[in-house]
Length: 254
Image (cartoon, rainbow, N blue to C red; front, top):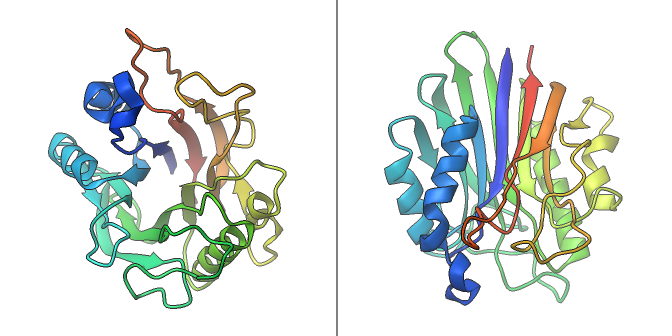
């Protein structure tokens, strides 16, 4: 079974972005999704406004699930979207990257981590042409703390180790490929995990201002990676899709 997976940091709606304030580029976000038509999407930096926008405008083709990272489950979120004509949802959960993963708004604490709570979303899905489930996980690791990122990735991998069936993990990991955090999934001995986006050289461009560009967005899987690419983002009248390239990978699950 071949699946097209997208990881997409949509950049939260910050008025300071000027012409690239989300309401000015939201139509480009939808165009990119509809043109690529992925089976699975992991969204990062989804604020309350963006979450409502995506749920409303993708509702014909996708089920969009997830909650915010704050104590009231609002605020910035890691969302999961899956095609309605391809998958049914068995179960869904959001866990906080912390020592208390079921406590909303919790963090690891300490001076290493930023003030931002971090989460991962996990959907157990059944493909309508298969008789066993797959697991789709999406996250956004801390932008400040090296230790916090390592702890977050370790927590996610621990959760994966508890699951039966194949998985796909998407996310903005906030680290380059040569970092310990990015390499941690590849060192798991119990599963052969690969970076399906290993051939993608860069994913973050800061609205065309970041040179050299950086790769900080990933798609990991224990399936077979087939192809991957960053979606082109040439500005239209100065407006980009996001400050990250949407990244797509074709993956074969058995």
